Image (cartoon, rainbow, N blue to C red; front, side, top):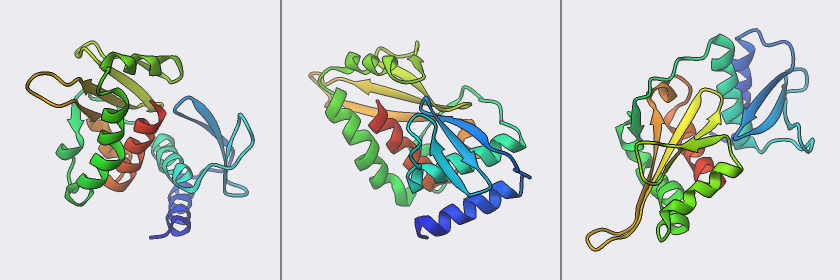
Length: 183
């Protein structure tokens, strides 16, 4: 499906919620205004339209938010534990895990530098982990392990089980790619 078709489908789903007025959505700490009148998603900071894949994620999220945000479960799932991901595992590794390992594998504690620029906090259950609030109510946990005598450096992004109530697998891959690029 092309971005345009996916975007139109996302708008259709959003209109089913009865959306009639502008809404603001914080995406990785940046506010976007969703305007149903002209079907636009615009950055509040610089008045620039969001890229199509950003708009799609925001529209899908907003449709769920308008129906009622699900509670987070505090049960962290790896991408592999989500259903229907088999065809996306290579893309997830290439777009998410490898860039994080490349950036932080030699110095996992440098990950904490991302806390300055994002709505994020340290994850207390890990030596080098942070929880990034991608969207309000949509946390992503990033963990990095440095190279040692036995293992190569590694990383992973985990999602609260509630992610399944927000997004399809393809959206989760895109969202995880945003996490990797924003940190």
